[in-house]
Image (cartoon, rainbow over all chains, first blue to last red):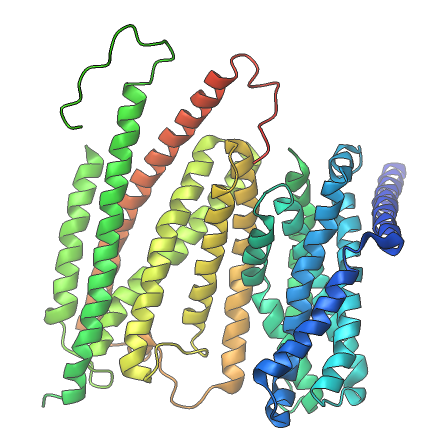
Length: 240
Length: 61
Length: 239
């Protein structure tokens, strides 16, 4: 009885420690960003620009742009997101802080969690910007489906941050990381993209085929799988 | 009984088989060559010592 | 040597299977001559995914045991896998043009999943190429290999679901003739091709593995030679 309680307390302490470390790392990233590090904020401008450029590429027919809306929304988020997660590691590397991070005697999974939280914040920021812009530029009514859209954006952001953080950590020391990161990420996030776009389109249309539940399940499953993969292997990416 | 459309398809069939079998064969040949080269490298390792005399004339050069 | 026998056997059976597929087996009533491509397409696909599984398993083996043999197997699986994956896609396109009228179909789960498989393989090989130190390379690649292994079933499921929602009634895939069960000669031709290709795959895997082992040993002794006595203490130069 006592041993079980002691084991339970040890687990809770371990979890709390993980969370404390993760929060500290994420807070550090946020502070750096607010102090002008510009890791993520520049990608916000890029996402907006991407939406504009898409309009030139696919327009001006309003109907076809509206139909392409969900896809364009997620393309903008993901293409900018690749840069964002990359820069979250890259700038830290350039400051020499990444090496220090690897040396801290804290659980690797906690470091991963912290970096992934930063990535999640970045992706959510991208989503929060891209959603209203898409509505405006492509004349799509998002107000009616807003709660669902927020959920889909949140799930997509989480999955992308999960795998993006892992691969960014894996490639940050390589000279060719600017090319390698998208090359690795884009195929792996293909199901995320598919599910997110399908869910978005379905929400905007009022879910005529009843497919929304399945897409959400796919998103959740993907998120869990990638978080697990990242939590288990990020430590390997850190070691030199 | 011969379907003229089906006859036209033989081009695609040929393209499919030729490219795949040819490509695989090429890869196999290249692999064999790389393997031969790697084996020769391990049995005759380069020496770090400086040459004591001029190297022998290579008849293939 | 056993591998020489294997190679010869592979050559002979591939030739025989090809001959049988091209002239021995009758053409399909619905798909015509193009249906013959199915044999090489399905066989290639089978081995592409088998190679992928091998790479994924070997990657896990490396991460757990750090044995150079594991990394060699993973590399062999990836390189040979790229070959068969490209073959699958090519055959699929050659089949699609006469039968569907287009080279590509977004609703065919095998084609789209295999295209992503190719992309994942390329990423795997690229991250290997960009890392100099053998152990670092093996670890980085192994992470990519395992993530890819998690991803592919998700991709396949999502595309199948995607197709299920939007599928037209007359969608045809290369192995439609297997459902309902096909006449004897068709199945025989497929199994023959599969067997022949498997032998070829085995030969390629064994030799690529051997090459990988030789390369690893050569790399290791070159590194030790450059830094006599220090190789263990000094970390590798950054790639």
